[in-house]
Structures are given as structure tokens and as C-alpha cells.
Amino acid sequence: TNHIRKVLIPNLQKEMEKQAGNRSSRKRRSEFQYDYEVYHPLEEIQSWMFEMNRTHPHLVDMFSIGWSYEGRPLYVLKLGNRKRLHKKAMWIDCGVHAREWIGPAFCQWFVREAVNSYLRDSSMRRLMNQLNIYIMPVFNVDGYHYSWKTDRFWRKTRSKNAKYHCRGVDANRNWKVKWCDEGASLHPCDDTYCGPFPESEPEVKAVARFLRKHRKHVKAYISIHAYAQMLLYPYSYKYATIPNFDCVETAAQNAVSALYSAYGVRYRYGPASTTLYVSSGSSIDWAYKNGIPYAFAFELRDTGYYGFLLPEALIGPTCMETMRAVRAIASGLLKKCTS
Image (tube, rainbow, N blue to C red; front, side):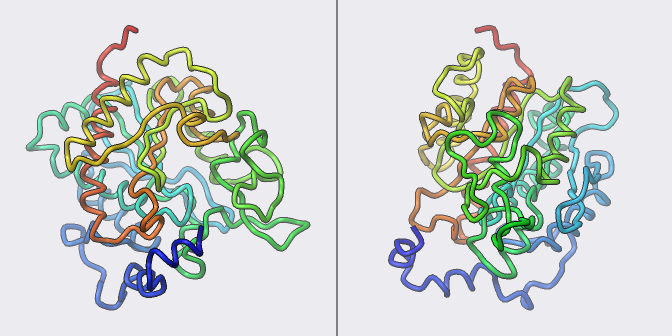
């Protein structure tokens, strides 16, 4: 699709440069002046995480769950009122695929909204009091860094392969659930390469280990991707219906109408296999199989005009509407679903 994108965006190079920004004009600012409506390189996102942790110690906890292939720490923020114990939890990751820059932008937006509206918004306060929300702003740190430095359209991790020069594994085909079946490739040079074995990627292994350890409390898993304007849930690897379909579909319906209420953007929702395509070894199927009843993948804006090069002017609206959807899912976790 790259050649099509070049026709749609007459000056692709200019669009890419605009988004990588004139870095010198964007000095490191303190948190309250941090610009949430531009894309940030990895180093800035990481120092922003430290800053959020430092300035909101009562609501934000920061820790590393492991290291990437290239040795970068895998940071996670835990949001929630820290006085209460044994709470339900929700996990959100962004940036599984390197080129989907709107993902990390949304994760940062979510954290900012959550901590800033804690005092003035009673429904957000209730969420933060009753839930722990784990946020991983950049899952695929090596790939994200590479997409800034070298190849804007890079998708995979950056792990090396013994036999081929091609690098990287699709971090959303590397999970231990129907691994490397339909919709994944065994060839290391392909964008959907499933890896040499399940959880071969240290990033996937670290998140899987963390979620397994907290499986008693984690009730929702959300992964933020782009682009397609869809809200997907299991199964990805087969056409069958999940046992708690009614509860999950209702949650998806509520999320999508909350999103629509912001700017009238329409999202399709449904099982990933029938709504998008069949894929094996995906994180939502793994989360669901491991006892997390609500597992969702968002495909954010747009539907292909800009594709991965979503302009910075659309970060605000995209994050605002997605925020409504994620909040709807979180609120739903506090109610019993009986169907």
C-alpha cells in the first residue's frame, strides 16, 4: 500500500518531516507544558513518565517489567488511588507496532486526563479509586525508536535472526495462543513473522509474565493500534463465538457509541477474525485465554487516507474520542454483567 499512500499524500517526505518535527523548536519542557498534541520520541516519553511519577506520587507508580531485545527498560505506569488494596485492574498497552505513533500519544493523553481530572471529575475519581490501571505507553520500545531514527514505516521488534539478515518479529503474532497458525508468517522477512517460538520476544514475554502474575485482578486488557477505526475482541484466530459474547459485545457497543458522541466518528466493532482478519498468536486471544474476560484491540483513526502518518492536528480529537471509549469500558468493569 505504500505506493498508494504516496499518491494520496502528494509529498510524503514533507508529511513525515512535519511529524518528526523540528526537534530544536521543541525544547524539553516540564510536565505541565508538555505538548500532548505532537508525537514524541522514546527518550521524551520516558522522561515524561518519570515526571508524571514524580509530580503525582499519590496516583502514579512507575516500574519496569523487564528489558527489550536491545536492552531498554520496559516501563509501566500504574494509575489508581494507592490507599486501597485488592482492586480490580485494567491493562492498556500502546505501541506494539512501531509505526503506529498515535498509540503512544493516546497512552500519554490517557494518563494526563486521569491525573488532571481526578479532583474535579467524580466519575474519573471513582474509576481511579476502584481500579488499578496499568499503562504501557510504548510496548515495542526498540521498534518505536527505530521508526523515529531510520524507517518511519517499521512495524516489528528489532531482534536478530540467525539465518536471515531481516530483523524483527511481529509482537502481535508472538503470543502463546494458536501460535503461527493462520494469518502469521514463518518467514523472518515478513511483517507478520511470528518469531522462532512463542514469547521469543523479551517484550512479549515480560508483559505475558506480568499479566499472568496479576491474572486474579486484571479484568480488562486493551491494546491500542492503528489504523482502521475499529474495536475488536476475541477470537482473532477462529470464527467461533466467545462464551461471554453478550457481555463483551455490550461493552464494545457502549464504547463505540461513547466514542461517536465526541465527533461523530463511526467505528465498526466485532470479533477480530470476522471484522478485520484472522490472525494467530495475538495478544487479545492470549489475554482472553488466560482468564481476562474483557480483551479489546482498538484500531484508531483513520481509515487509510493518512494511514500511519496521522497528522498531529488529529492527535487531540482522536485521543479525546478514544478516551470516552476506554472510560466506558472501565466503568463497565465496575458493574456486574449478567448475560
